[in-house]
Length: 313
Length: 313
Image (cartoon, rainbow over all chains, first blue to last red):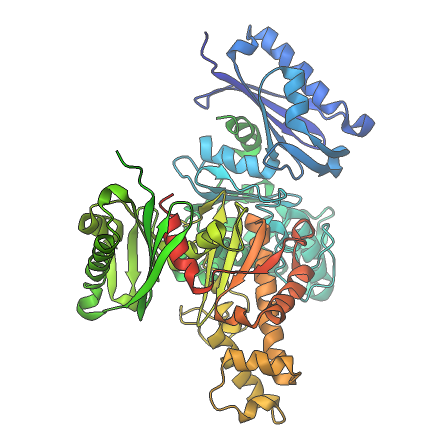
């Protein structure tokens, strides 16, 4: 019997699906994308994926004998058994993605939340290599996060492990987060949150801010202006860093990881983001956890396909 | 060869050492206590324990052939390898308690932090039976806590997993916690913290409080008076509940356990404590985790010996 060494990693997003063909040593053989077809309540998505994977197997002269299986990352809660619990973004209700795709592909399938599997990806082949416990925070439109303990994703009882973006950090907040609660980390530290905060600050006290002249304010612009010393922009960046620094302190008191990784679009700004998070983390963390390293993630958008595949190993 | 079915669970405290002889099905054969002899920087403690265990083995006609080993709970940080990282309370520095005691006893030894192993105890034979992920909060002089994921203690990188009492809950606090930080959960929700808060409230606005007449104010008295409707006492209990409710919400966003358990002296007051924690938890928790049950722990002071033993299985 042939040794199975190939596996697919699939990262399903709202507009595109990223796919990677890997070897079990972590080598990426090929990666590509297909569009996410959301018609029929997302009923076509897994069929599209199966068709795509099968055609790649033909192209590469691979049979099911060569394949370990397919790992999938989903933008919603997924439990330990590979059951998706609603994924509004894709039109999905509750069903076993693992069973469904496994039947189509005739090979093992594992599924997890996209932010959780991204953490696993960073552990496998990114900045988290060599660690067995880490927490990845992905700063994008929203905030994703994944908690790894003993080399395994902490999925949680109903897939809400690593929902660090929804920690209630500000009890006095009046505005609501997308989740319906008030005062979530995401409201201050995601790209969207940073833009909202900037607008608030500009209304109150930003008459002289360089941000005023910007037409489409983005987190990227805010960080650039903060680097140049604009006071309002700096205030937004400080609030982002303080919010995350405090929240990472909470995480450290609960799972005490070996390392924190910061990824996602906002993290592309680099050191300025790390430094401000670190400043507040060191200030508010429990003494025994004060020196936990905080580093930039390195796999970027590929963390999802790496981690999706890694679930099978 | 005989089947090994017996094991010891040892819970080392600052004044006494609790010992239990168990069968591997969780049956407690016998439990007793010896005093903690802290002379010589705590050098006698493990020798005393070994002597005690050996004499119990003779009494029960047990040999090392019958014994699975010894599990120990320590009031300080212990890493995955059974190395204690300072235990001020006992006079201990850094050393491998597992190696040391294993040599004395000639059988396997596992060691963990006392609050962490208590959580394991509740999972084995207490209110956490049947669950594989849970968080136990022990409300006593301080606040201990243990996080269990996938049936295993989350020890953390340097033994600070489950230090929920040291989450910075109040950024504006001026007074320091024992840990040196300001605004820790423990400062508002431990028995000591509740008494401090009561004194603060009495100074400011407690002229008519029934607490004024109490000579030695304790958390127990405060809760009793709160039950009778005393406003100052109620304020302290609300603050305790709010602090813990919010903190458990953080925990849920990070590890999303199947159940929360509340133990320790303060929890003996029963439903009033649970209800006030629950009220605030349901208010501030992320929607997907809002219904996580919060229950009273059931093993009381024995959770430590049960959990200490359970480490070996």
